[in-house]
Amino acid sequence: MIRDLELAFIKIHILYHADKEAVFGVGLMEELARHGYAVSPGTLYPTLSKMEAGGLLTCETQIVDHKQRKYYRVTPEGRQLLNAMREKIKELYKEVIKS
Image (tube, rainbow, N blue to C red; front, side, top):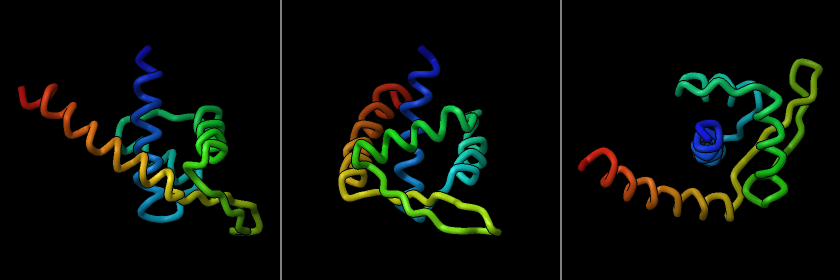
């Protein structure tokens, strides 16, 4: 159950960062680790694929140091979801933290 909840937060982090700039797997794992999430490639890459298939992210492949790297950006639908989640986070914060 804990991992399910963490995965929801991880997805929100992904949307947030992909809205700010193009993100890639290893960079996201490092950023998420900064927030206390230990995310393996076996968790992150399927999550990114599902978010892309769900229309929340777009993916562009680039060659970096002679290797393929997939960069993800938020879509308009992903941004809309992120904004809706911001409102829900504010409400939850008021109930859980402020009370």
